[in-house]
Length: 242
Ligand SMILES: O=C(O)[C@H](O)[C@@H](O)[C@H](O)[C@H](O)COP(=O)(O)O
Image 1 (tube, rainbow, N blue to C red):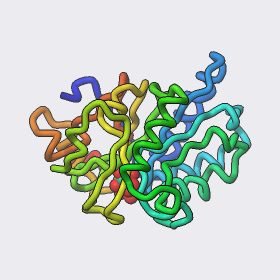
Image 2 (image 1 turned 90 degrees about the horizontal axis):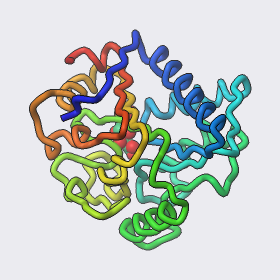
Image 3 (image 1 turned 120 degrees about the vertical axis):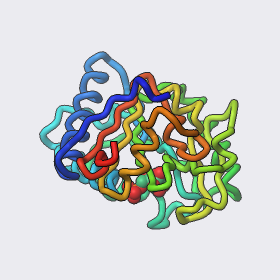
Image 4 (image 1 turned 30 degrees about the vertical axis):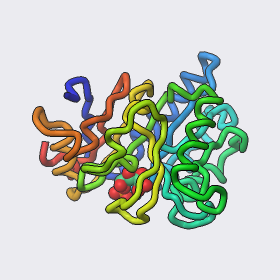
């Protein structure tokens, strides 16, 4: 498992974030040069926030056409859409509010002020993905938790077993808040590239388990993710147990 995963090591978190930002901007530029409108999957968490800020900082010097990108999220916390807990709000404040996106191309998971349950939010998000034909993200970015979770796929949770679904509800998440919506493994498999981004010694053991020859997806959900291309972007601390 994960035999095809590529590992890219970086001296520290700043270099890591800078390299991911360059690679993402290059990838978007190439897709746009081919006449495509790439679909990009954003994630939540601390390293993602640093990346979003770095992308906003570099935006004026890049030739990316931000209005020709479709934005999605790999997972979302099921709270009110203006809650600071929302991955979408974090991405808006750090990146999307600072670049010329087309609001019609930004597809956040509905919040608890918009639909009644996380199940409804997952269904609505899946329906939007189907109607937008968003099967193939150019890049889906993911963080990893110290327990090996990615997006909102947590060890031992029923969402790991979801079949024939794009996005599903998650309850009792060990990382607060408890109610969430996540893409399924099946949806992630259709991405052209999945990029894990991890920084810090707290992630080292989970990263090593995700990339080990032996182990289970139930224990380390990140083992279950494979895009056509899977890249692990790590700083030395996160790579220290490999
Ligand atoms: O909603 C979330 O919290 C996430 O999408 C989650 O999967 C996150 O990416 C990892 O937990 C890493 O988060 P940190 O970078 O903050 O450790």
